[in-house]
Length: 572
Image (cartoon, rainbow, N blue to C red):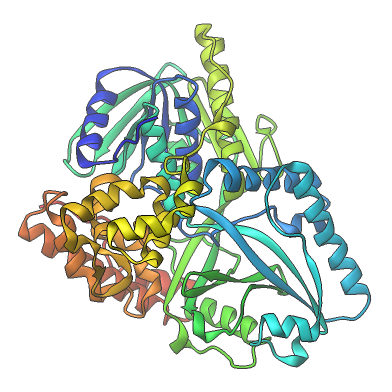
């Protein structure tokens, strides 16, 4: 398979081709499930289109806890099948599908009661490890029991009275936004027509059958009609709104639950591993993230703006209070570099017509030609994508007598996966050849895998691109350019928030780098001087609105403050 760049030219040609010929499957929604569904359908040999109203992963799929895990809490609910399914997917991602993006992460679980808690929690983690081995190879170490002294050697930041002992176990993590973008890009490499900033405004019908969609190109202002034999609604928390475009109620309702995360510098918590802490209602993670920690999450109902859920002062205080309960040196608001909030789509009020495929997700066929997927968790996106495409294929076979192959995504590595391990082993040689420090090569390999050669070729042609960004030195200048030329980034926000994580990894939220990045991407994106100024102004307004919202006492006032910044950057 040859890599395909999600370039401005590919986007334009994809929209033209979607308008010119009837598709087998049109996927609406460029999150992890929609992008996964496009890849699943394309690798079955179907004609596929994927449209996303904003940027790939701009909703829930860039705002998760960034964990690939089985879900220890589901063992307490005795849902062994769900845990086993998720652990199998974790193993596939680490070993075959995306080893360049998914890597091990350790967690310490402090024990606060002697005797019974070690037996109870230890049995659960032992079962977790056993299910992992049964479900397939993961390559992760088995859990260990630790004394209080042993635990505090790993995590010196823990208060002595916060634990009597601990368990140490392993899961995996991923940069969710980059992984979702890689799914969309891999789908394009297998022939899918892929376009972001393409909003579905109407579902077409002939009688009761859904036959396609009307799509607004938010970049050009044009409207196109896309005909498709099956339309897949994979819009997450927007499922109900997308359903209504076809003039019918959905087979089920989706409720949004807000999860807030904080990002703090690595030196604020002295630890060699992550933490998992029990709260009154759920669990709290402290997750290693490069030179940072991610602390999360909350779980509260959200019925306000879905495009940009706001984190309030109460959300931030909740997270700080709970993590400070176990830390010798408490964190303060001044330690917080970044804050992000996402909405988890939860199933609610499922009808008898819904085909419930697991506790976590459901697939429905509310009208001929229309398939809906909702619920679920990030780790099992591939299973969800397979299930929804299976349902679309059932519609094709029933309506047209088509014979479509079964899903093969269990054996289809994402772009950048093939040859990754060999390149990792040779990273010192890549450093010598490129002139970049070996640490920079490691950084690039863990973000681009074997596609690193494309970036190194750009640096060889223009050595200035091998320099770090002046305002965000963890990233190289070439990464900003590559985001625009190869990764589908259309706007400054896409580069700073999802292709990189500068917006949450710097205390200034990326304001110190906006002009440099805008200058780097302006040429490949064809921006005028006026557009550059507009992009910078839009990003600054977004940061100001987010900061103001995070000083508000509750959801309503935080949402009102966040809405002070416009959602979409217009094109001049």
